[in-house]
Image (tube, rainbow, N blue to C red; front, side, top):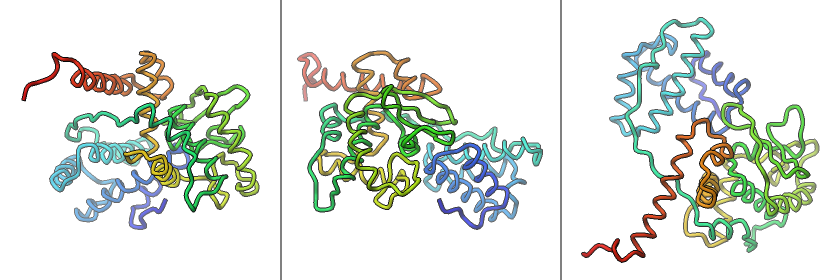
Length: 313
């Protein structure tokens, strides 16, 4: 992640704290760095240091950014990053007032998560066709990636954080003998998930191929052509490519497979608490969005099939 050179020293220090002590995912760090760059730009324009910002200024900046087209969700992320920075300063005794704590982003509607139908998710996992640029080792790796994303509901950051074997510094690993994957999720919370037979078979095939790709001493389970740990963006790129080869009609991304995992599991089991635990959600309210997704599917089936649901035009 490239850090903006123009950030104030305490903003750079806070970013380093998020990276080293909080161990946030690379994608999250990038978003936070962008949020801090916006804060720095606002401060430069107002002629104040970030640590000297007042609540009235934050409100004006938030309103202006919203008028310029920044959506509620983007503003909420921005304010969350800023809020964390000022609370960090307060814990160190560098400031007294917290200028962001009373500022809230406009409310946003909560869109339904996009999930693949079961047949498409299975087709993506079992895709075997290749193009001219396909390498058997990479095909084995990509299949294992899809099996774990869809079969275990992993976040992409949890996936790329997996190591080939357990260790003191390992963020996550798979215990094949116990059919369990151990991951480090949001907020540095660990959780363990069952691994199904197809994912274990894909893992064995990938581990055989990995030996010819991984650089000496590389701990990462998933590595690139060059032998280093695979990144979030590389996973996204390979998943789009695999979806194209599988003939899927939509742009597939890693979180869509997590949504598919949750939606299909909830449709089959109806156990919302279990799905919450498997996803690692701190609040069940976050998981409840999948009940809306399931109801939306049922509504479409009803509207399309039931005689009393058809509306005259």
